[in-house]
Amino acid sequence: MTTEAQSQRPRKPAELPANSVGLVEPQSHTFAGPFKLACGRALDEYTLVYETYGTLNADKSNGVLICHALSGHHHAAGYHSLDDKRPGWWDHYIGPGKPIDTNKFFVVALNNLGGCHGSTGPASINPATGKPWGPDFPPLRARDWVHSQAQLADYLGIGQWAAVVGGSLGGMQAMRWTLEYPQRVRHAVVIASAMKLSAQNIAFNETARQSITSDPNFRDGRYLEANTLPRDGLAVARMIGHITYLSDDGLGKKFGRELRSGTFEQGVEELVEFQVQSYLRHQGDSFSGSFDPNTYILMTRALDYFDLAREYDHDPVKAFSHARCKFLLVSFTSDWRFAPERSREIADALMHANVPVTYAEVESAMGHDAFLLPNDRYEKIFAAYMNNVAAEVQGGVQ
Image (cartoon, rainbow, N blue to C red; front, side):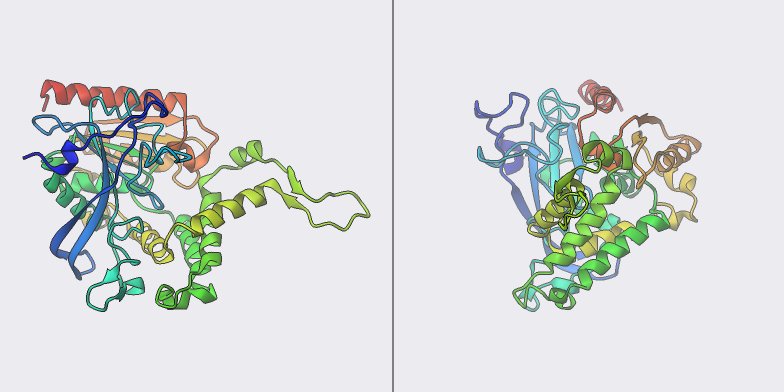
């Protein structure tokens, strides 16, 4: 059966780059419930918003799932209009001739359940009350996202993914896929991720949440009913998070101690503002106008709760013994939020579980954000691995 997603192909106007997937349109599908969640509650129904790039082949073996990170969404590549100032969040790595080559793969990128870019989440209407879910939306775990993604795969007719790919929180989802649906994943690409958060990471997330809930406009999470928004708190939360995604070296090279305004001249009473202060405020203000605070709280809690080996006697080797796919792991030298040590822990566990794994540690000064940004060595490693995935799919290798 040919689905709407398979038949729609992105258009590529002459004004857009030749290696872009072109103009794309988000699609959505509502799944009937009950959809049971890890917390024990269930949703009567839920909607997922997603985009697709490339063409699904005849035997439906070339599908690649993109799992997004904390503040990500379905718009991973291409443009929604010719007026867009920038493309999707991973456009550098998805498209014709790029590492995730849309001439070879059918790429699916979605906004996770609980998100705020069209998928059912805290800002959606609760059918039981006719009001926004707000803080009443059920807490989620990574496995809930994976189960909903599996339902989307069923809808698209994809029995097995050629690869499940994700960075950061997306990498956690990719790992969870290999344990929940081992026969449905051929390759897992896990970038700048970890099997569980450190205490420091949990502390950063809690500080960010406190900044949101302390905002007077938070209204116990019912700000939408009050027609308000805790913008200041969310902006500070984003600033906290953004600092952790960067590196000291990267910030130093980009901003140093350059001033945006003011002076240190003696005898002049003028408030000094550094360029980095202005940059962080811009990041916070921009984010607070486009992201739902309750979703931010929900997502960071799911990130905190993630522990891949918890139900396997806290033994990651035992956990990964259930995996049936091959892995690519990538880390970045300056990433202190998801340090290379975390990826090496994953690689060691996979090797002891006799699961095929390729690991690369990439030199970068860009911190955790490096997985989103151009990097020649990273791009070559990623492309080489995905070319092998494409060759397997085309050759029918099991």
